[in-house]
Amino acid sequence: MPKNLKIGVVGIADGASTQTLLDRVEAATGHRCFIDMGAVTTDLARGTVTAGELDLTTLDAIIVKKIAAEYSPAVNDRLEQLASLRHRGVPIYSDPDRMLRLVNRLTNTLELAGAGIPMPPTVLTENLEAAMATVERFGAAVAKPLYTSKARGMTVLRPGPTLREDLVRYQADNSLIYLQQFMDLPGRDLGVVFLGGQYLACYARVSGGKSWNTTTRDGGHYEAAEPSDEIVDLGARAAAVFGLDFTCVDVVETELGPQVLEVSAFGGFRGLSEACGIDAAQRLVDYVIAERDRD
Image (tube, rainbow, N blue to C red; front, side, top):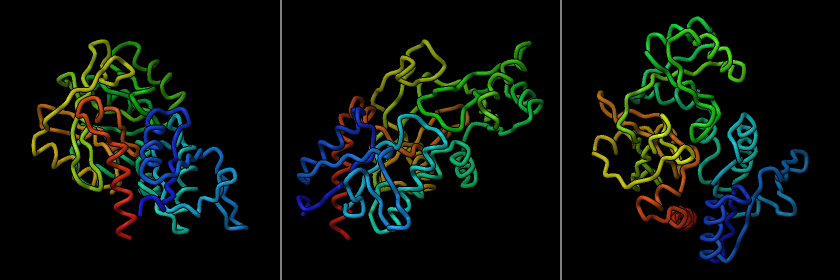
């Protein structure tokens, strides 16, 4: 029965989505268990994994909402700790081994490309001359850090007298230059959401007109969207590459048809709530409880 389950939530203490998820877990099970990855200790000699006084191996399940406040290589370390916990028998949603393939944009992109998922033309290089030639060939390119979310640190590069200087400045913080062709888009992109591998809903992120990107942090907003069967099928194919329990596939509509930008390791709740009226936290908790009952 759900009331006997102890489900932990990995997230950010002051994060709205984390708190919403904790509320839904507590309402369903009677237990509220927040896990701060910064407090997790894995003791290999003793065979323990703890967060403060809490023995994480005693939990019936863990839901990962957010692994860190910002993406960085340190995220991999936290996911590796969770993976070791899962290998001890604690069910974790989503599987941290699978999330590890997503948090680095390079791995994310290479996995999608290897699966034949259509994406905007992309070039990866540490060579400055090759990067300059790519921007010239693309006409304009978006330079994307390997660890980022909501377009943080991304910049649009265009041919011109300052291109070399712009690339040198960018490479000072990003040794590998990730360049994706700048696409002429209709002012929106789509978040196609999947739960348990099944299509849940789709929302649009619509540009506020003040930035090249559509993120809410740069003035964008959410709207409901009715995706074509082609877009849903494409999203399902991209999501299946990684097999997460809850994820969002970012899709752009281009003159060549829909293309995938990335698959999210930590699908968001806000777009589903504001655009679709869906309580994603409740849906996720119901899903996890059903999976535990099935086991």
